[in-house]
Image (cartoon, rainbow, N blue to C red):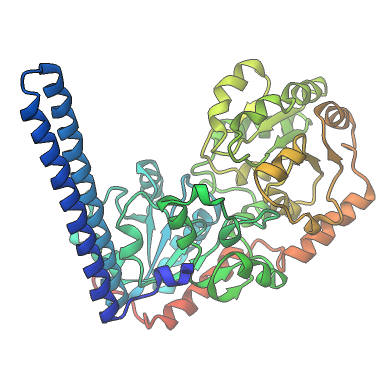
Length: 479
């Protein structure tokens, strides 16, 4: 079964068959639990003279009842989301777009929403934001935006109408919002996927786990790999690659809205959700004529403590000797390591977890990374890149397959140990050569059709097009 099949609408006969299957499953589960309860009761009666045995059987009975309640809730949720998805697909659509927040207020969705919010009235679009948590709701409200509550229990009938009548849905990651009904309520919208970066790693439908890892969560992640109405990328040449990883109808190489901030001075709205303290430390270092070295590695599957052994102390010493500022941005998966690292490296500025990196990325004098897609974004500023891969063999064997042919010409020198990298950081030229500068320009031309800071504006044109396809020609009178 493909991801497209999982999300495809069922015919009436299929719905009835699915309902019968669920009811049959529920009946079987109930019968099994009845047998368990009967056995427990029998055991209690047979061992009534033994208080400890009675207590044990009572505990088992309570556990069985709890399991039954959990099963009933799962079945009820399955039925509810299936039916709500059907309602969403048949519901009339308004000229309305919903932007879905990721685990932090940043990435492409943030900048796409900011642009849509600024032009909502002029374009006649009713713009909404679906937050991941209450903090995102607070940030959106402070910026004057319309926000669906993070908890479905707080949704009013008007909120339900907003979701069911939304014609366009914009995401930049797997749609796994904590609201268990959100995806179903928005199932009828035209889904635009921005994703979150040019990748040299296997992702989406090709990021498969071994059979022992199969389960509901893994299946749900795969199911969110499409089908999309449109995939939004950075270059026309990348369409075939995106089709390896995701299922979609059409492709639009409009660029990434998050890269727009690299072509301008950040506004107050751009800085919402950013680590302002680290941002100001970076600006102060630049004002003193010093360099800001940003170290931004990607995460390791199953090995979050690898960064403890990466040799950060050597990089910190090298930066400090020149009076430069070393900024470290750990992936959210590995940010729990910060409390262990920060006391050992007092001169290092650790970016606060789950904050927006892109205003800070524009302040960096040089980027140190490994496999992160941030290296492609950084090509927009055409500054030094240094590749640091101290655990390359372990990463490629235990974490992800790579497509390093994208980097046939490296955008900067490659290091596999911290001591050698530290020596490069002490140099005025950071180990860069004319060949590296040429490689950066070639990569930018290859993977970005636009270098103008206008990605969000092009995205809004795509949204207008998708609203027309959805038949949402006029704003919702109820908005």
